[in-house]
Amino acid sequence: MAKGQKGKKITLKIAKNSIRISFDGGRRLDLSHMGITSFPQCILKLDDVDELDLSRNMLKKIPSSIQKFQNLRWLDLHSNQLEELPKAIGTLQNLFYLNVCNNKLTTKNLPQELNLLKNLRILNLGLNCLDSVPTTLGALKELREIGLFDNNLTIIPNSVKRLPKLKKLNAERNPFPDSTQQEEHADSIKRTEKLYLVPEKNLCSSCLEMCQDETDKLDGLKNVAPSPSKKPSFPLLLTPNSSAKDNQEEWRLRGKQP
Image (spheres, rainbow, N blue to C red):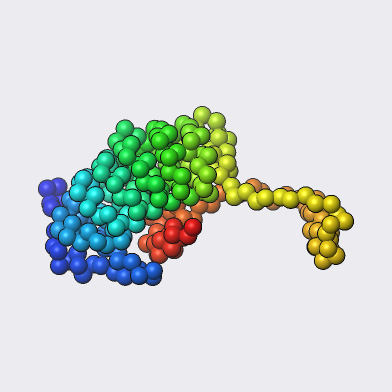
């Protein structure tokens, strides 16, 4: 876009025609990839939508009026030019998905009010300019997935790593002091399974046979050369140049699972 050239003007008619019905029956306002340079004030009249997609534009600021979208469950702002988020974002209590990946956000300009999003399950802060992770994010007890890749982080606070429901943490390509620390941060988030030990005499014949089969398999694996280790993969925390758009419905539905 040439210098001084204005972005596309979004009218209320254009916005209304951009509303789609998602698989779960929610109303999604999709204004992604439309060359928008400033937040369209007209969409405040559509504040009853459940999902708002303003990704892949040239937005530099999100106004405090975003708080009018009290029904919002899903907010996608990735691939813009945002340098800060408004404090009012903390009022969106129904929000379970927030993607601000690939912007210009700094730690200083992340509002403390993010810790008020008690229902947030997926948070993507990747590809920004963060030099630290606010420990206050540890208040997001419902968080399942967090993207912190491609920032300037040297440590992940324990308050975030130890979130009770966190299953995936992508912190790749950060300048951690120890080269192995990056993988440790990612590997520290694992789903744990309970193990119960019982005497052999208490097992039924079928269970005993099953355990013996598993034991035989493990014994067989001891004689097989180990395959090269693979780095963790995080398919739900995609970078903006990926097939994110094709997977939005999957993200949406996954985020609602208890």
